[in-house]
Structure formats: structure tokens, C-alpha cells
Image (cartoon, rainbow, N blue to C red; front, side):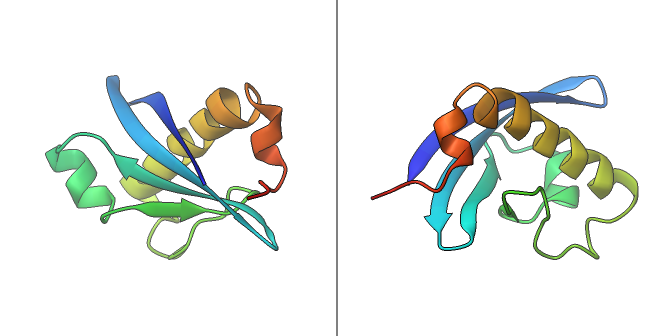
Length: 96
């Protein structure tokens, strides 16, 4: 497992998240946790969000519209730009 930090802008405000990159037989999973307490994030994100390597999230129905969708889209964009594209080895299953 690798741990990375990412930063993204949501509604004009900067947010920092911790991303745990977890390998599995099906590819990498990205578990994202907010680094700060914020009323907006607490309302839209539970304790963490897990993405698969294609950007799909668990609890998809909860995150499919409105503010939650906006947050998920921003976080996934940041994962692709700041983790997958900058560290191509993270787009491959990690070997432990």
C-alpha cells in the first residue's frame, strides 16, 4: 500500500485529501479521506470514499448527483492528474 496526498479545488476552495493506494487482483483501489474537518465535506463524504481504477465509487447511488457528484468528480480528476499521471507505476497493480 502506498499513501499520497492530493489537492483539489471544489467550489473555489482548496481541499487536501490523503489517498491510500491499495492493490488487488482487480487492479488498484484508491481510498480517499479528507485531511480537514469541513461542514461541506462532512455533509457530502462519509469517513472515506473508495474508487476503483476506472473512477467508479462504492455507494454510487449516493454520489451520483448534486454536490456529492461534484465532489467525486473533482477528487477523481485530481487522482488521475496528481497520482496516476505523475506516478505511472500507480496505475499498475502494486506488488507487495
